[in-house]
Image (cartoon, rainbow, N blue to C red; front, side):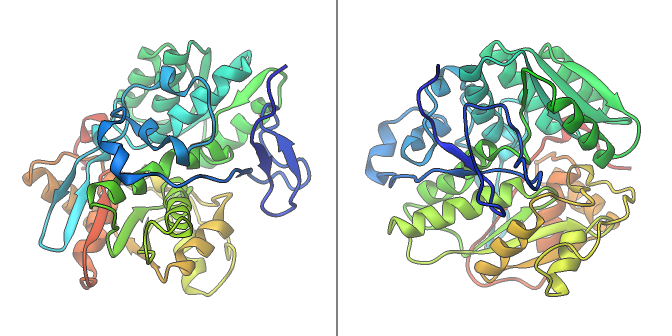
Length: 370
């Protein structure tokens, strides 16, 4: 029997479940879990001597006894200035070449202590790759569901780590439905970057790194691409924690970016709605990683952006393609989804102070957009 651990909690129903259970969603509303966990302050002066991975922020992370053993040295990505007021955080320099490693290491460490029969994930590519890699590191059997037509390079990377791939006919939403059905089978740990909150507690280290890099302060604006919202919600967690512990005086504005082709959250935000107005039509977009018609955490995403005085921006396919080529000419080859924030910031009026955009995935995974 495992020792008592941090509990899952449904943000809607307030139902709790032990985190050592394989129950992947709220049994009443079938919504995603949050984590009933309270972080401690991270002491900035001590960080210089700590391990060079996201586990350096141990006070902020849920207790995971196998965490450091599962690590691949993720995190600590460079912050590079693009203009006088905009800097980019190069999260495509992670071990699997995307920011998803931040959450995947947490899920793999959590799954390792539960010893499931199988670890299951669904993904448009990057999250599946990260789960496959960290699952291999943790000695776990993994299967990854992907949409039909996923980049061959991403599929090759998933398989190279030893995970089995299930290609699902249809779009990203069809893939998620198929994975959730399989997740209900006995002995399956659903390593969902959307439903499992351990992933969000990994992505929040993105903001902790900015705080450390900037000497105990934060940028004025943090821009993030949003499909399922895992990076944005992790950032919001970190902002709340840093502010609550008195480590920052103010919270930056969170600016969320969606592809114009699939932008249900932007539509809801600008309509003043608390939840999705309607699911988006699954139209083709170069930014496949954020083409999510009905994100399960929509209410939380909208609330988080409004709480910081942020907004939603959308970008066209032409802007995405141009931004990818522009960054490549600056020496940074980033996949199309990962350039959405640079496309948005380049087109929008400049915001006061320092703005940081993430470059989330490597261009080598998908090639140059046509």
